[in-house]
Image (cartoon, helix red, strand yellow):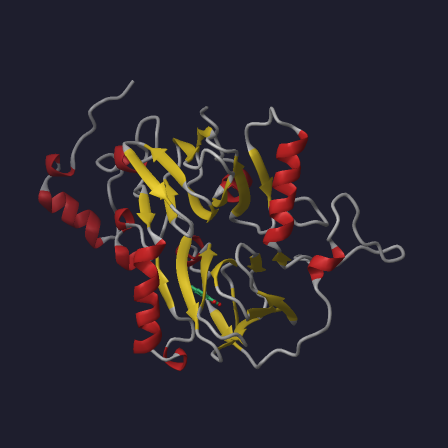
Length: 346
Ligand code: 1HN
């Protein structure tokens, strides 16, 4: 049952002022606002950021602002529902397209928010995370989890562009966001990805497993794509051909707050994702996909990105009738599950 509650205007102005002078506020005029019936108020609006509109403006930023003046040369994909200046794609997710030009260097730092990079375009760049040099190739996912040093370099000949996904809005809201600048990292040999290159078996030192909280830092697209194609071929009846990027030591999500997935849509496939509480981001790695949510329909081509608010179903349609399309998905599921607010409403 929902009663009409008293409004602020129903109270004597001098009473409200007396409260305010003592840093007090009556709850009942705002109760329905903070606790709406049945479904949360979501500022996250379905939003589409076409890559072809971003790329020229990002290249222009490369001319206008030298890397030394930017540290990270990024155009932020901001959700207008939150207000552009908030630099949020959703309540917990930040998205940005970052440009590194040949020969440029983005110096080493570490910070409390967790980041991942999904490589969009270009060859020859690399990011060094916790001393591991991770080559950046199209579709690769590279982790830079909380607290780990990271820096970017580029030995190639053409611009490199990637999509950054961070839990910055949440960590900032928690008043827990800060960074520390560092020295150029000493690169140690080895690729964590080689340690975990085969599913179902994990490296075992005598009596000891990896003590690293984040044992695998680079997830090559060639491997994720091969896993999806293998699943699809093995089980033609499987409708959601999807993998989750996990920590290969624990099987948990790769990072603590945001979840990362790759989804394959078979030729012409239409897939309805149920209404679940976390907001989601979709980015086309290969192919073309129509994304329908609420009253919006986005046509996503390669390298396009869009976001969907939580508690809404999303229908994805592969616009290619003769070949598969592949999406990278980021969402707030790990956060919702850990906090106990995760819901699947079907
Ligand atoms: C950051 O450290 C990077 O290291 C990119 O490339 C984007 C956005 C907000 C805060 C830190 C990077 C970022 C960021």
